[in-house]
Image 1 (cartoon, rainbow, N blue to C red):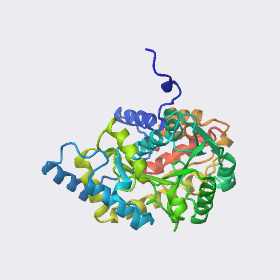
Image 2: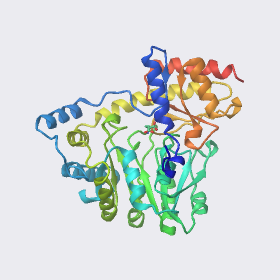
Image 3: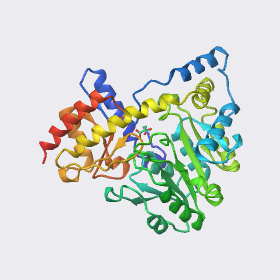
Image 4: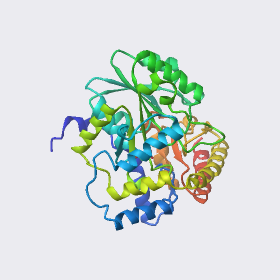
Length: 388
Ligand code: GLU
């Protein structure tokens, strides 16, 4: 079949493809250590499930408003005000089918053919592809582990042209886990304001911070930065709700209305009763996040020590999310060969850095239990020692 030209430019999502392969191997009975997809291994907190069951009982099973249940939009606006110092009302919020969908809506609503979107690499696998789907041009700015994988204000300034429309900022970052300090965020905000471009701040990992790191939303830096900021987030990571598909976008009312029109012709509203679970997530007790966080903190330290004790590997210590991104260049392998051989010989699953625009690295998720991490790190050690 002759497919549309836009499909030819797209690569499949490697994070999802690899995770599906790992899960299939596990289902076949293979002893797989899966560090691929970014999915907490905790169940969704009970009070969130209970609220959803109650919504089902109450008949919340019909179409709802495209932009989301009013109560959820209101709760998200309050959360952004309370946690992030961002002054949004319910009309500034659209509830979407996951964080990914909020970004997709944004690209469709904001990007014209030929518009440039600046994306620091390593980047989350779907950013450039979404820009391409909107006929925009992803402008990739390379960062490396020597600089903690952070784009500098100078690099951002250099990448800006008259065609630049949007800058994609993701802190804490997927795939590197690094967190920009408040001063670094302020410096990037200055460049955004000086050049009058927009920034989308993907804050889905904002609750997953370690060692006293803090999260500053770029929109909270100044009124001028706020006017140019769009916030993307969701419930998947902080509340272990990956399969629920509930995300949101916050921004100027006209943009949110445009996203709503697009969503009205594509997916309509997010599953109505699931939105009641999300309301309970925001309004209920938050200690479930702390519990996950202390488990992640322990795993992060264990994994980091294990990786840095393997000759030939080195890894920066990131302060957020649940990913590590070790440098594999000394092994002489590219990231695809590395991950493929590791999978075939040791049944350990990682995502090749090439998926994130960083071929000298691999991404390891530590959203897996400690036993699996211990076993996986032993196997990784043997594998790398056999190659160098
Ligand atoms: N964001 C997660 C990851 O990077 C989920 C998978 C995806 O949607 O790409 O692993």
